[in-house]
Length: 444
Image (spheres, rainbow, N blue to C red):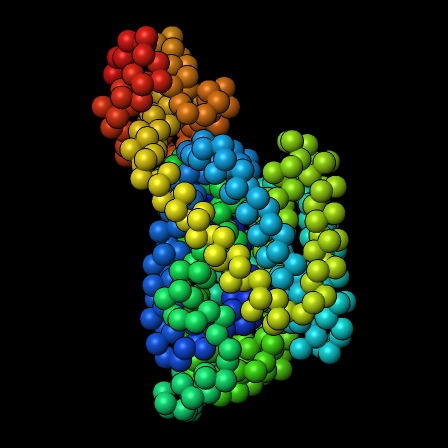
């Protein structure tokens, strides 16, 4: 379980941290154009990202979603769901081609190659990745996350250690940057909504890959906290170097060049990898939405989306960030409202489902442990718990059985592990069964 929640958390970070954040361009326009007070907005954004990570991954796990519409069809009325679907499809495509543009700008600034060539390389890699299975995809998405955290940490330490201008001079330099929006608080909400639009579809898919809701919650909390730390470190770094990066397309890469050419080369590759991660996540979740469960159809749709996105990316990265991001952010605010209402209405149900799944796993542990007896009553109990779940009972039993088998294989005392690591509130389980199976007689 620790390995699973770490992999999901890192994959989630890789989804949210894309071209604009890793390059510094969006933080520059949204926050640091307001000077030092923009860092207050960064702090608020960090807290909001932690909350969103927890909520989104738990909802994905609760519904075991394979794509975002599987969640929204359960939490929103039909008309609202259709509107959200349109927003996510449009935003996913728009964010995707902005990211492709960022890939080209990144390689152009470092190597002098045409931006169109860099964007084309990223597009080809996105299409190739679609032919991998989901477990490999999740590993690909998360593999570069520790690298960008380390790289931005180096940039931050360097920026804090070197001599820099005072706050007044840095604020004066910040005035040269055109703000994406007219005031800081609107920028903060708009950018958070942008993060939600960017990450919610893949967050539901990542959460849906996790049976245990508590594991999804830990992954969301860790992923959100890492995103908050990376954003804060990135923002401080940019502000301390404002006098020399305010007019640069990829500001963080310019800072990396002052450290060492070799580090700048490495940072270029990391940014490119993160952009590729985000582009793939956006196009993959959209393609899954229209694939009808067919991997072959998903790959065809993703290839078409990538080709169209590449054509749109040729407009230019800096211009696209300033023009498209605020529009997507405004659309995302409506999505935030729907998610907040859904979470408030379903929070108690999520907790009950979490307890039910814990109990089901504990029952299944008896099936695999040599020193425990798995009786007909246990088998009947497992069937009843699976039927009372909000998700497909047969699939839930298979997954719970697989987790129970892993627990028995890796723990010296599997029964003790299940009791301590999978606590169960029997009253909440009884409530879930009574609501889902009103004709069933509960026996704890």
